Structures are given as C-alpha cells and as structure tokens.
Image 1 (cartoon, rainbow, N blue to C red):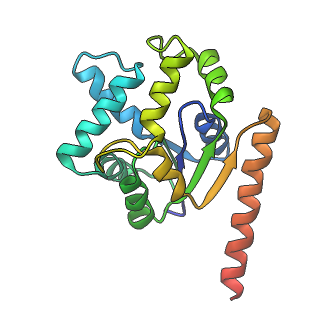
Image 2: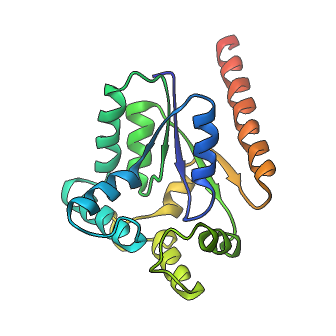
Image 3: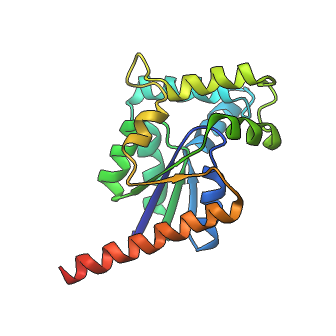
Length: 196
C-alpha cells in the first residue's frame, strides 16, 4: 500500500467532500460509517439516523475492542488491489492509532465551526431525525465531548491525533486549496526524507 489517508472530524465538517477529492485523484474509498450502515440494515434499523450509527459504533467497540471498525476495514483494504486508499468517518482514537500502526496511515482532521456545520447538515438532509439546532448540538456534543468510556465515539480525541488539519470554514475552492496544500507538504516531506 503506497498511500493510506484517514479522515477524522465532526458531522458535516466536510470529510465527505475531502474524500471525494481524494477519489478524484485515484484513491479507493472506504468508510467506517458504511460498515455501521450495513450493520444497521442487517438489524432492520434506519441506516441514515446518526444516533443509531453512534450507538452501533459504541456497541461494536465495546464488544470487540475499540479498534474493531478499523481492523475490519484494514482486512478489506488488504484484499484490495488498490495502492492508494482514503478512509472516512474514523470515530475513536484507538481506530486512528490502529490505522497509523497497521497501515501507516496519515490522518487528516477536517473541522469547521458548529454554525457552519449545522447549515451544511440541514442542506445535506441525510438524518431526518435531527430537525432542530438543539438536536444537532446534542448529537454534536456526543461526538465531540470527552466520553466517559474509551469505546465511545470521540471525535475530539481523533482530531488531536491528526497529522494534518484542515479548517473548512470557506468555499469549496478554499477546501480544494487546503487539500492541495496537504499534497504539497506531503510531497516535500517525502523529498526531504529521501535526501536526508
């Protein structure tokens, strides 16, 4: 595997858009949330309700270990023919550590202020169970506040482990510039390592 990128960040921060930019560069796409959606469908639950996905992620990490979603994704990746991979929706620091160790992943944190994310969440319209800003803030707090158990979702803990951070506060062009900046900095770092 020549390049593995992991994406972390709160809901509606722009991770999916960043993932799309990587896919346009030939990266194969994986999502830990897609694994949770598959599990929700298998159980007859609505796979588009964020709270259901959060509950399933917490349950699976508690039963099988905090890095289980990353471990299962790594198995899929290792069976793949792809050499460049982007992994979206990483939700627990143990998953970040596993991907960094097992796949030598570079982790990109994508973040934005809560008001911008609320607007994007409304525009996206995926989770129809969250209708008010107060409900969104409650969902966001569950993701971003320090959890009382290590197996629970912890986006803030994931962001703290990121190798590179993108503040997605502007236009799509601004976001594209930040992704290009990542590629330039990564290329420069690789060049220095080869020379060093």
